[in-house]
Length: 199
Image 1 (spheres, rainbow, N blue to C red):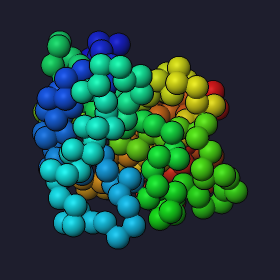
Image 2 (cartoon, rainbow, N blue to C red):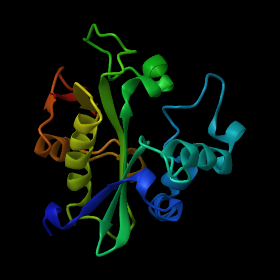
Image 3 (tube, rainbow, N blue to C red):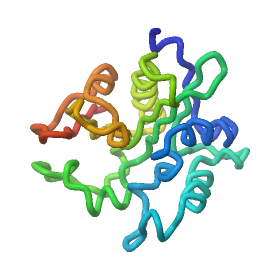
Image 4 (tube, helix red, strand yellow):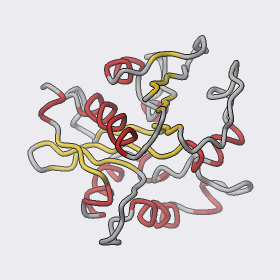
């Protein structure tokens, strides 16, 4: 199936239940609710808990606010069914990414707090819907969403290996981001690479 068959919408414009349907289909999505890179110093999965993390995402998505114009991500639909999620926002909102992650910063001298650079931190396809072009469609839609929102660049930090565990594949793959126009900006590590597109 071609990615063009996938309908991608901003998460603030869809029901919260559709976001949960996608995330709850995967144990890692249910546990994290795309908060890994947003947790505060000293917080852990256990200290915050899955319900509180989901409540944070619900607020960040903005689906309960009829006046919301920004959101934490995108939801993909196939034949009207929610089948994919992509987290994409200004890189500066991902505090833990700025503080603790090594991959995005090795070999680069860059202002980490630059809100003009957006980051795609998670791409998740609902269980049983893999291999249908959903993740690739989400990557392309993330680039366009960032562009429309005023980003001057968009980055992703995908896996470079197929030996990763399924739970480790949430950053996406090199191929899906290459199809969206992103290119490596530093030599890859054994497992990850920084990819970027100037907008």
